[in-house]
Length: 429
Image (cartoon, rainbow, N blue to C red; front, top):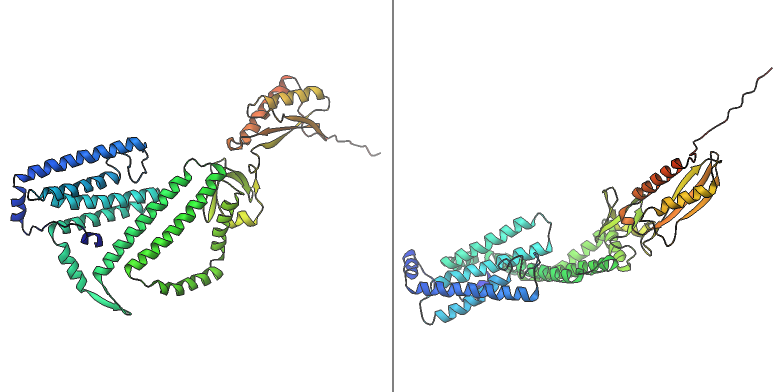
């Protein structure tokens, strides 16, 4: 509403006959031709700029998925419309552009709001209703502006007032303040989405975690600044928030200790880079790969597809096994028992061949075969090997090696013992 005051509002047409007379003038064809040329020129400019910059991202606020899908196309067309309006008004009576300018203005507002929300909150369910609300408000303002009812309604709303302390508020002030606050927050989200996109571009591993922390901190800071500016625009005295800040501090000190500890722990993890996205960890007997590190919690996904949401405080205060922090290589061990009458050298050769038969087993360092124990039921061998692709699973590789060992032992007639006990009986005279 506040922005509409500064727009070059066309002369109002009071009744339907005035509208009909204006649109039956021969000069309307000239306006339509100029409008069509403006649309073609705007499309060519945006398409050329899109090809020059190589913008093909669907989430791009300026360009969108197609040429006319982003913010830039209606914005360029609006500028061309203003230029055409100023030029035509000097020679012919203007009718078409009196409607085209408000329509283009509403389209720009809708595109900015919708595209920024889509870029900032990709999977939130409440984004769709909010987009529809922005569209309805923008089109309603356009209709009221074109029909000439907007000034009348604003004057009527300005008459509804009440006192809040030493300040006099009206319905018009509140509506204008809310729209200004929404515009400030949209701009803030736009800036934070641009910062996040630039920070997370071509980042992997620990660098991705650190950049994600910086992105979250920048978004929180910008949202806070935007909220303060929005509250000031509505007319709220920010000095009164000092009492609220004290109350929040007391609440954090007593009732929100765990929540605050989780947020602080999250920033500590991202800053120290002790755990990164993609690391394989074991926490509280749950093993998996870190897929997300958020401000409050961390998501760990196991090989079976289960996901565990772990509070960040637990990752700081408890013992965590990070199997890919310094080195991605992991050592595995398989225990095999054979009969005492077996050829030890042959068994060790077969076990080594079985380990080397799997391409995932590293050759450097090479697998190791050792006679571990003289067991109660047979000779116990240990097969040790290294892998560096833990994300592909451990149990499947161990199963493949065990199958090869079983086939090799059976082929060479090597006994695989099972528990045996000898019972001695004694006859009593």
